[in-house]
Image 1 (cartoon, rainbow, N blue to C red):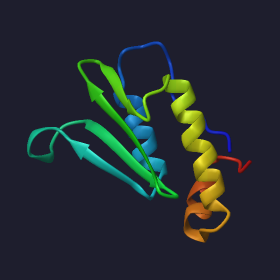
Image 2 (image 1 turned 180 degrees about the vertical axis):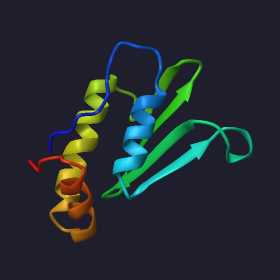
Image 3 (image 1 turned 45 degrees about the vertical axis):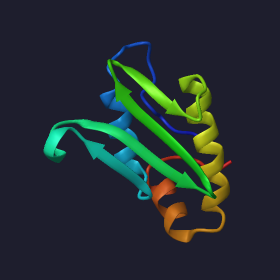
Image 4 (image 1 turned 135 degrees about the vertical axis):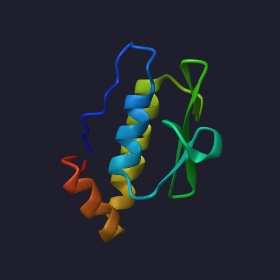
Length: 101
C-alpha cells in the first residue's frame, strides 16, 4: 500500500501521529495530561504485531525500534496484508487514498 505520510527531517512529530490516528480506524491514541493537547502516542496492532510511535523529547520512540521510514514501510506492509481479510480496514485504507500492495 502507498500512503502520503508526512515524514520529514523536521523534529515536529505531531503531524505523522495525527495523520496515522486520522486514517487508521484500528489506531489507539494517547494525548497529553488529562487526555488533552496533541496526540503523543499512536499504537496499532496488526496481525499480532504491535506498532507504536511515541513523541518523546521532540523525537520518535518507535516499536519495533527501526528507522522511521522502515517503521512506516513495515506498518504499511502489515496493514496491506490485514486489509485482504478485513473489509472494514480495507474500506478505511482505500478511502484514505492508499493503494493496497
